[in-house]
Image 1 (cartoon, each protein chain N blue to C red):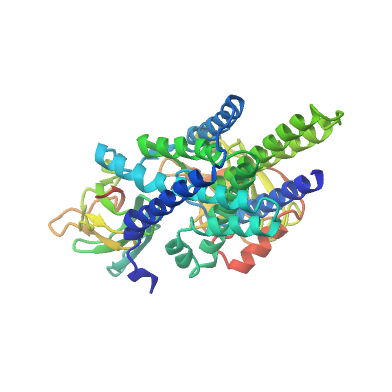
Image 2: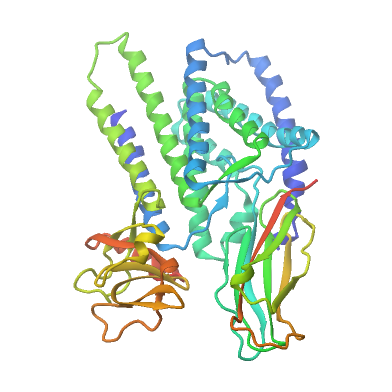
Length: 364
Length: 165
C-alpha cells in the first residue's frame, strides 16, 4: 500500500511547505514573546568548532572507506531548490524545538515526548515500512538510522535547553549545505554511519556537560572532575577503536566462528582475529597456516594442507582440523581474506544468537 | 549529573556492542550516505541480480553486486548457448533519480572472445519508490566455428543514477 504514495511529492513539496508555514508562524510567535536567542561570541566559536569536527569526521571517513560521486544535482537551480527543501524543515524543526523546550523546561516527561515527536517527524517512513519485510534490514535501519537519530535529537534538545536553536542551526546547516554542494560523498555503511553519529552525539553531550560544570565552578568551590573526564575519554576512545576494528579499518579484523570444524584450536562462538595480507604474501603461504577465505557468501577458516599450481596460479587445498575430509574446492589467492592470528573464547555468542535469530545467509 | 552521564555512556556502550555484533554477523555492503539528517534520502541501489535463463549445461557462476555495480562470471559451452541475467534497481529514497551512467565491460583477452553480451536500457528516470530491471544476455556467438579453449567471460556493469528534476 505504501508504494502507492508519491514520496518525492512529500519530500519536494509537502515537507518544505508545511515546515515553511510552521516557521513563519513560530517567527511571529517568537517576536511576540521576546524570546532571547542571541549567543555570546564564545558560544558561537565553541559550537562552530563542534560543527567543524563533525564535518571533518565525515570526510575523514571518506579517506578510510572511499568516496563516491554525489547523487545530488549541481545545477544552480537545483542547488537552490535542494537548499530550500532540506534547510527549511531543519530551521522549522529547530525553532519548534526551541519554543517547546523553553515552555516545558522543567517538565522532564514533556521534554522527552517533544524530542521523540520531533525525531519521528524526520523519519523516512517509506524506508521504515519497507524494512519491516526483512528483519535484517529492520535491524540495520533501527541501529544505523533510527537510534542515532533519536540520540542526536536528545542532544539537540539538551543544547537547545542550555543555549538556543541558533546553536543547533550552526551545527546542522553548514554540514547540510556542504553535503549538497560537494561533488563527492563518503562511501560507508549503516554500522559506520550509525556508530559515528552515536559516538559524536555522546562526545558533544560530554563537552557541553563539562563546559557547564566549569562555568558553575567559577562561582562555587572547585570539585575535582578530572577523573571522570579521563574515564569518559577512555571509554569514547575504546568505543571508537572497537568500531574501527569491527569495520575492518585496521590490518587486523575480527570474525565470528559459527561451526566447530577447527576444534580444538577454536570453536563456535569464538572470535578470531585475522591479519589482512597482500597478494604476494598470500601466494607464499606455508602448509599448516590457517586461512580465512570466502566461498560464495560464506567465510571459512580452515588449515592449508597442500599447495598446488593450476594453470600457472597458486591454489590451496584446505581442511578443517575436525573434519575427516579435505574441502572440495581449491582456494584461490583472490578468495583469501587473511591469515589467522589469535582468537578470543566465546565472546562471539551474541553474534551467534543474532545469526540464529535472523537466519542470516552468510556463515562465518 | 554524574549518574545521568553514566546512564548515557552505558547506553552508548551497549548499543555500540550490539551494533558490532550485528555487523560482524551480517553481510555488509557499502552505500552512499550523507550526514545524519534524513529528511531527503538518497537510496537508489541494485537490490537483486539473478540468472533468469541458463542454457542447458551452462553455468551462470557467482554474481556479485554492490549498490551501483554488478559482476557476472558466465560459463557457456557451445555456440548458441546463452544466459540471461536480470538486475533489479530500486529507488527506495524520496528523491527522484535520473540515469547518469551505464557501462558494461568484460575481462578482455582473459575471457572468451566467442562470448558476447548485450543489455536492455533501464528506465532513464526512476521516481521515488519505483523499480526498474536491466536484462543482460550473455551469448556464445552462433557464428563461431572454432572451439576456443576459454569458455568463460566475466562482465562488470556500472549503473549510476543522480538526482533528477
